[in-house]
Amino acid sequence: MERAQEHKTDTAPVRATVFAVLGAIALALAARLTFPLPGAELPQSAQTVAVLLVGAALGMRRGVLAVVLYVLAGALGVPVFADGASGLETVLGPSGGYLFGFGCAAGWVGHFADQQRLARPWWAALSVMLGAHGLILLFGGLGIAARLGAVQAWSVGVAPFLIGGAVKSVLAALLVVAVRDRWP
View 1 (cartoon, rainbow, N blue to C red):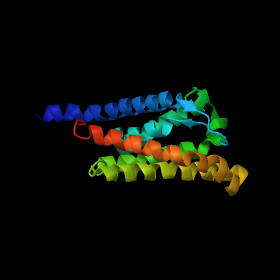
View 2 (cartoon, rainbow, N blue to C red):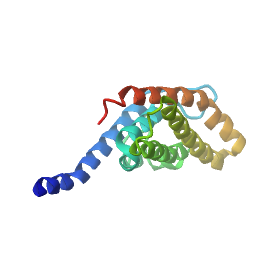
View 3 (cartoon, helix red, strand yellow):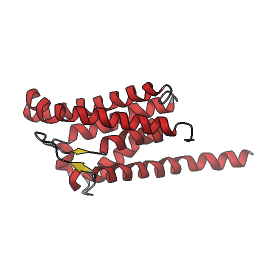
View 4 (tube, helix red, strand yellow):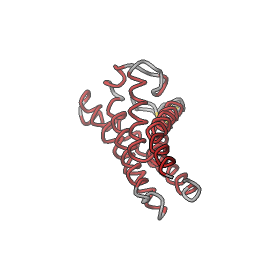
């Protein structure tokens, strides 16, 4: 019995890393699903839904690790960001605030998932997902405001994404609620 417990503990970091890598891959694949929004400097993408679902599925630590691996891969030149973008200039450019917000959002959702307070009742999942999208937009807006000012940041970096963020929050919450009794 003691030997089995020791083996299980030895593989925990490997499993966590594998799941985080899979989460980073999910984020990269979701970044490929984009469509432009009129008046927005950055495209709308499925990334934020993936960020929320990665946090829900992996928990706080592994979810944040998945985002860190994703951003690191992109910064190193792997074309994983929206529209196939990559490079340090992307991380430090208009997308940088959003990318930082991705880590915060995955951690936020993951925290509630770790506490098993994410999907019961249904509106709890929705409020967590809305809060996570709020974090993404807050940091994304701050990143753009540093370059263009607050008014421009609101008009090109936050306002165009409010409706999409709400819709994607509902979608993520519905998915979490749908699988809550089937997820280990």
